[in-house]
Image 1 (cartoon, rainbow, N blue to C red):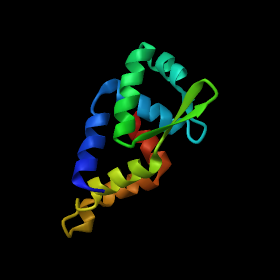
Image 2 (cartoon, one colour):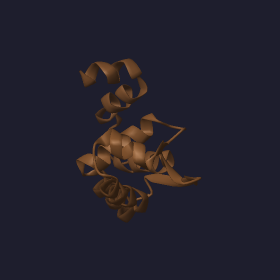
Image 3 (cartoon, rainbow, N blue to C red):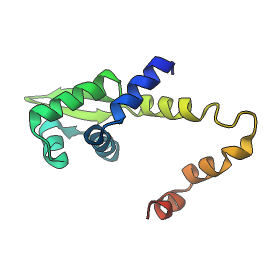
Image 4 (spheres, one colour):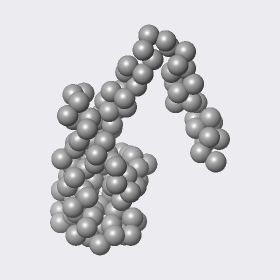
Length: 117
């Protein structure tokens, strides 16, 4: 991932409604969620949600697919994975032990839940 793409994705996620929307879409994979339902779930007007979805879409973090009269949005997990790899790619600076706790917690669902409490 290029730096410009990473900055665009990070800035898109650096807002509470967009972050909550993206996390909701990740949880709904692979089915996705219609735009109106997203707006209701997050508690914002549909026109406001439309603006947020546009920003997330420009950052390639989500994709929308028209189904009849509604658009179903899904998280673009490939872009999200690329962003995460971009963030941790050079974090160890030649010292793998620095990233070991992070990598260990990513590999263990039990540890992720217990740390969230």
